[in-house]
Length: 430
Image (tube, rainbow, N blue to C red; front, side, top):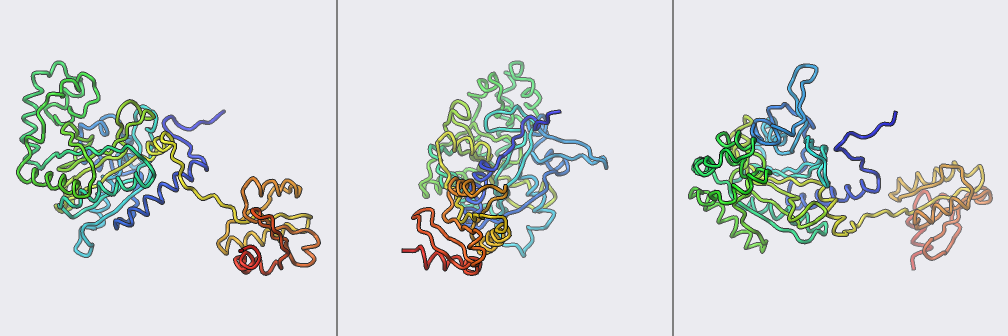
């Protein structure tokens, strides 16, 4: 029987994984500059963590979630997104306590799971990098989160980014807008998709997020939520726009954007790129916003929050589409060549000592002839070769050769294993 990976998953092979590692390390470096610290949460949670926070009318809950009952008959879900699990951990571990500096800033990386049609940059198991910040209502934090996301994407070399923002306001805003939207959509009820008919009176904002072409035509002329913002919500949104202007971050206001999860409030945003590699027109690669009621929803105190998430697979597709070469180091410092049966033990000791000293080192493990070993050293772009034959073994020396200059010297093995830096400095630095 031939085994294959499940549909909607991918094997990330070593050459590709090194690119992923670079992206993750770049994220860690930038997030650290903004004082965000890593948090790691379980890959699966109780079903209610996601159904309660994402909304029971969202596509995530109704169509896409991988959920099951375990052997203890607990209703479990593989995480479809990162925020809800982080909020659950924030509440359960009382990170809202007075001993924790506010805002509490965290980031996460890991696998997420959604049952949907696999396509370019979108798999059933996908990987997400995200950040969350708890404890501040200030618009300055909204802008910091947006700026950090843009900084990260630009640091990777992406160009042609477009930032779209909107406000979903507070509860007063949502209540006022909800009724206006129902009043607008009710006359079109028979023309709506089946999903939107169900959502219309439960959560009409979901209709604005519909992927159905008929629904999209209908909502084109729907009232704008920005016309229903409460006084506080309007002031918050005005401050966000002003601060983005202050940082010279370009943006468009898109009053049709609502995001796919129910927990968002006030500022929401999407960062898009116009790339045919992900379909026609602009495609979202990073998105997020405020969720000021979510901590309470999961049993914590009243505590505002904001964050974003981005898909690594989509990021990889875009980097390839823009021909961006990531500056990945793949330097082999030393390749040890053994000539003769008695040299294997010594070359093994040498490469181990060099690795302990911070050098990357390799040797032959296939019992090949010297010519094949030197070929490997050349193919791997080794900076130096260290060669030991029977005579060197007897004299306790080795021949060290610079593969760049061609210069070769004989050096005691003890000097190589105790301080190879000195060997390089004394013999090859000019």
